[in-house]
Image (tube, rainbow, N blue to C red):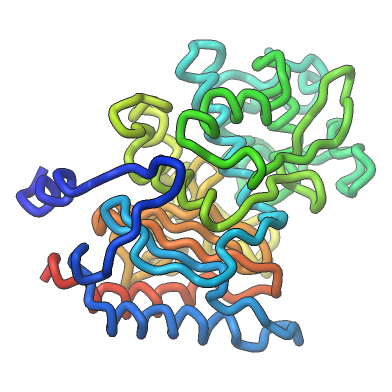
Amino acid sequence: MTQTQTQMQSKRVFPGADWATATPESQGVDSAKLGAALQKLKEITDAKNHEVTHHDGITQALVIRHGYMIWQGPATDTMHEVWSCTKSFGSLCMGLLTDDGKLSPDTLAADILPDMKEFYPTVTLRQMAAFTSGYRGKVEGNDGQVFVPAEPYFAPGAYYHYSHATDKLSELLTKVAGEPLRELFRRRIAEPIGMDAKAWRWADWGEIDGRIVNGGTGMYGHGMFTTARQMARVGWLVRNGGEWNGRRILSEAYVRDMTTPQSSPRTPPWEKDGWYVRLPGSYGLNIWLNGITPDGKRQWPAAPAGVAAIQGNMNNICFSIPEWDMVLVRLGTDGRIPNERYTEVFAALREALTDLR
């Protein structure tokens, strides 16, 4: 640990019922330059994309430094679906079950659910969470048939395909947990880290083979609903390697595995023109990473290498930035941006950090 990291660790706090607030300057951040970074965030999220009118800007954004909230928009308590951010919540649940010794990321899916044996006898939970399993549901729509395995898209590990596999993964984890994932998450993560029970809910598909299965989320409407203020707590947990104010919530080993790239940048995308072609090499266990993309550059070149992001559709994103002891959240319901543009925000944010110069 460097001297700067030791100093940052000594400053770190954890929220109680709410986040403690502080001025940017008191936490080593230039407020004017922080404002410039947030304006850059607003600029790129307000940009016209796919003929969508953007309206949320940075109203649902906030910045945490050393555990203090140093900036927040006026709508950080607005609750709505966060779409594929749900994937990372499922990964955290897999971490709990891994730590309990009930499974590991390398457990065969077919050893949990017999319906996986015909088409997916060698597929692991790791491959399901890393989008390299080739999993295909009978019908990949909103009618629940995604849970019925069909012939795979490809042999395990041959390609990267951002798909509906996480809903089937949720069913697999639910079978092992013996309870809905939202209950496991509530008891083991949400309550210990102080998430407001009224400010999050995890929707489900109803009963699948007698078990309530929360969404993965591979399809809209079945996933996590929450606010920026609550999402920041999950980001702070990831930033702290699974530890919360002296209490071990998740093992450091699992968080390290979760935030390690699970495929090579040379892994070909299943759809050569798919929107996700930058993700091989920079995707962990259902979490985005600042890894090396197929073009040989980092996902966000201006950001520290250790950045991990809980990311979902409609510009919903929560960055954990360990090197800067920071969490940056931006939520909304207003369309899409090219994810690579977040590097512009990191470039401006780096300029604001007075204690790392």
